[in-house]
Amino acid sequence: MSRIGKNPITIPANTHISIAEGVLTVKGPLGAIARPVHSMVSVTVEGEAVIVAPLNSSKLARSLWGTFASHIKNMIAGVNKKYEKKLTLEGIGYRVEVQGRNMKFLVGFSHPVILAIPEGIDVVVEKNQITVSGIDKDAVGQFSAVIRAVKKPEPYKGKGIRYDGEYVRRKQGKKASA
Image: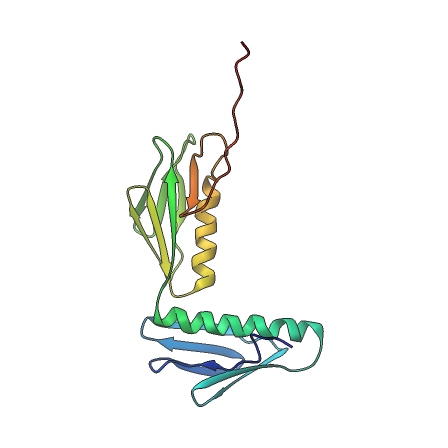
């Protein structure tokens, strides 16, 4: 029995949820998000609550029950308040700039690394702070991971791109023999 899935999800006053042809759409003051409903899960809107239930007792249906309930909660929260991830750029000479819908990274390679910013995602760069925000939690987290993968923090000097508050375990370098 899913602890998350069995509880009804309350709908805030300024949010509208509709289900049509297997697609769940959540509209709020910041925009709209749509997600296909899996065939093993039923989603119904009853008054000011959303009820998620498995269609049968298979292991897949029971596992998707709580997962889909969490997705709906994230969608409702996202259309009311944007999700935000902060990353920090560490390293001498490392720079990042936003050019239209592209990000240009100068992070120690022989060439600049250019990333296209997906639709629905906003990126703000202030000195060495990168802020990724948007209404879709999955998209914000995925694009933040793509940015971090450009230059992961290395353990010897700590240079690279890391999440704000992420701890990078440092290693000791070579020792000179005396």
